[in-house]
Length: 273
Length: 250
Image (cartoon, rainbow over the protein chains, first blue to last red):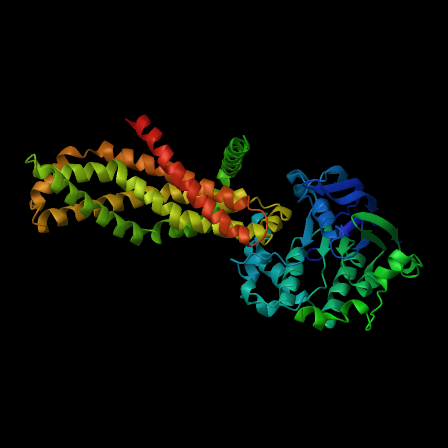
């Protein structure tokens, strides 16, 4: 694991801020009595890229929502830089951005206004400075031509890129990504991987990435945690995990495609009966 | 018991939303464009339907009053009946009902859709309170636009009554007599009472619809359910509040 960094540097202004770490301490979460997360504990060090992997429905996105303060854990505590993330005061002090899986762009605003909303509301600069910042972020993600469009006019991949650009404009100290490369073509997936890595290497932005994408996890992670059925079953570097012989992990990490799977042999017969 | 809990939870949630919104009242001058946009939505787009409805309420009032008062030989008082009914009750009540159906449903649908598609979550992570940018401008706009709508509703309703009074033979009184009675018996205080009622109804409708929209949970199907709930709750509240506000203003 790389050594923790003490400062993050703002990609737009070069200003330094404290790099933040995340502590997840014995967190459990249930909805209407149904457990989704069971006793999860780990730390994310300042300036680290921590990747969370796991099968669909294993609780990764719920954990991400808990970390960002959108949900409150049923048991246990989560701290960002020692502060409770569900409090508005914490969000005042630590800039945390979440890239949602479906983008969560504001449909009534243009792409430009989606990005400009945060700096305008938090009065970070005059309109000229905001414009420069917004256009710079759009250019990084190669979506500057979409500035005047509305989210409904964008493809899934473009929405994702705009969503990442919106997170960049927030100049985050902690950046969380929920499936950042889903719906993207391989070239754009590689670009996103480079952006995440650059934000870490150049600017020491702490990142937590939820993904199914093994190549993304291998390329960018300092550490990877794997969640199955709401339980964190392993934690280590990508090299350690991809060298594992644990059958629970190998089934997930290296799924075999069985073209002769007997489950699907009689589809036609079953459909006709 | 469960329903009582739900009602109390709803009241608590609405009061919390109101308090949260009011804490950002100082930001309203900076939210001028949003305020103007909401004034347009609440006032300008509602105006045609309010005018049409008020005109026909005025005509029906005059028609019914003409039929009923003919037996007493009191047809010259039709203007007072139409004037007072529109100003004190039907103007504010029907405008608020229209507001619930047209604006309240649109607010609930928009905010519910923002909640379902995680736009409200995105605002939360950006530390931009929904109460500040989505609720406060709407509350301010309804307070400004309701008196305007009521004045127009009253004038159009009174005019509708005068048309029937003049041109329908069973009523058959001159516009001069109609408006003389209207002016004599309808005081400025009556018009103000109606406006105060409308302010209360409009404010409650917008607040409740915002709250229901922001508390929507689940998938896209819940957006429709939220809209229905918002309109039904608004209509019930208008009718219930009508009695209490009327009693207080008497």
